[in-house]
Image (spheres, rainbow over the protein chains, first blue to last red):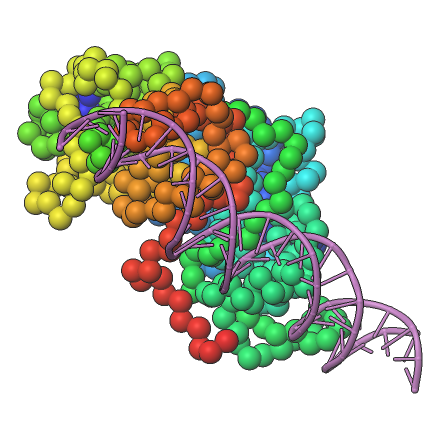
Amino acid sequence: MKDYDPSRYPAVAVTVDLVVLTIRDDELCVLLVRRGEAPFKGQWALPGGFIQPAEDLDEAAARELHEETGLSPQDVYVEQLATYGAPRRDPRMRVVSVAYLALAPDLPAPQSGSDAADARWTPVASLLGRNRRLAFDHELILNDGLERARSKIEYTSLAAAFCSAEFTVAELRRVYEIVWGITIDARNFHRKATKTIGFLEPTGMTTTRDGGRPAQLYRRGSAELLSPPLVRPADHAHQTNDQPGA
Amino acid sequence: MKDYDPSRYPAVAVTVDLVVLTIRDDELCVLLVRRGEAPFKGQWALPGGFIQPAEDLDEAAARELHEETGLSPQDVYVEQLATYGAPRRDPRMRVVSVAYLALAPDLPAPQSGSDAADARWTPVASLLGRNRRLAFDHELILNDGLERARSKIEYTSLAAAFCSAEFTVAELRRVYEIVWGITIDARNFHRKATKTIGFLEPTGMTTTRDGGRPAQLYRRGSAELLSPPLVRPADHAHQTNDQPGA
DNA sequence: TCCAGTTATCGTCGTTATGACGATAAATCT
DNA sequence: AGATTTATCGTCATAACGACGATAACTGGA
C-alpha cells in the first residue's frame, strides 16, 4: 500500500552495519568495536552507524568502512548482505539495519582511521560458544555474513579479495582452507585454480616469500563467476529440510 | 556511530516490496499493481507497503503477500532479496525499501485477496524494452529478483516452488527452460533430476496430464542444496575472459 | 482394432572434471 | 652438500555431463 502518505507512518531509524572479514595469522577475523554507550555499553558490536540524509545505502557502508578502518572501497570488496528489522532489536526505538559484508586483505593499514575508540580484529573462532555475546542481533548478522562468504568463494573469484593484489596459488588455497575450515590437496587445487579461465591472471613474477620453490604470482582474474565452481565438500552435519515461508 | 540517540536522526520510512514470480501459460510472470495515487499514479509497480510498528520484516512481507494475492506463506517460497535506499527513490520523503522475492506455483487462487484495486500477472518478457516503465526503482528491483531466481534454481531445489505440490520431471524441466530462457535435453535432465539425491521424492503415482506415456509424480525433495548443482549454460554474452595464452 | 503421434524413460559413447597420490623442480636451511 | 620445504606436473580411476539412439506406454483418430 504505497498509496498512503509515508510521513503518516511511525518513524524508523535506518543504520548500516558492517561484517568486515579478513585473514590474519591464518585465522578468519572480523572487525568489532567496543560500545562506549548504552545500550550494550562495553560489549563488542559490529561497526556501523546511521545513514545520512543524502547518501545511498552503499555510500553509507563505504563511509562507515572508511571511518572505522581507514580502508577505502578500492582495497576492499563490499556487498550488501541482508537487512534486519525485528521490532525490539534496539531497545531505544525501531531500528532497521542494512548489513554489508566486506572482504579485506590483511593490509598493513592501521586499524583505525578511526572514530571508534576501541576497534579490533577478532578471530571468529574465538566467538563461538562464547559467553560474551555480541551486542544487538550482531551475532546473527555475523553468522549470515560468514555463510555468505563461505558460499561466495565457491562460485566467484572473491577468495582473492582476502589476498594482497599479487598472490600465489598456495596463498589462495590457504584462504579456502581457512574460510571453509578444511584442508585441500595442494596439487588438485593448483590444477583447478590455474585451469579455470578467468580465475587467475599471471603476472610473470615469482616469489619465495612462502619458502620452498619459487611460486608464480598472480592477480585476480577478470571472471566474476567461476565455471565450473569450486566445490566445497558437503557439510554432512545436518541437511535441514527447509519449508517455504517468510 | 551506534552510540548516538537514534531519534536525533532524520526519520526514514521503511517499506517492503515484493517480487512475486510465477509461471503461467509457459511464461514467467511477475505480480504488478497499478498505482492509484501520486507519485507514479496510474503506473505499474511492485506490490508492497509500509512496515507496521510491531512486525518483523519477514512478517511484513508475508502480510503484504497475503493482502495482495491471498496467498499464504505456506504455498509460496519467500526470501529476502535486497534493500534499496537511494535518497530520491521516492519523491515524497526518504523511503528505504526491503525487497522480498516470492516464488509461487500457478495456483487457481483468485488474483486478489486484495486491497490493490488493480493487480495482475504480467509476463516479464513483455516488460523488456518497454516504454511504460515501472514506478520508483522497481525495474531495478525486479531485475535483481529475476537474477536471484535464475541463480537460485541452479543450486537449490527451489524450481519446484513454481510447480504444484506434485509434479513430473517434465514439468520441472519446463520451469528451468522458462526461467533460464533456454531449451534443455529432456533425457539428460531426467537423468540429472532423478539421480540427484534429495531433489525429487517419488510419490508412486503417475499422471498423463501432459499427454503421452504416463509420467511419475514427484514431490520436492528434502535437500535444500543440490550437489552437484545444475549448471546453467554460461551466458556467453559478455563474460570478459581475456587470457593471454595461458 | 490398429496405427500414428506424443511423451517418458533407459542406455551408450566420448569428453571433461575431480579425488587420490606419485614424482620432480627449485628454492632455503643447517 | 644434503635435508627440508614448497611448487608444479603427471597418472589413474571415477563421476558427471552433453549428444543422441532406442524403447515404453499412453491417447486420439482411421
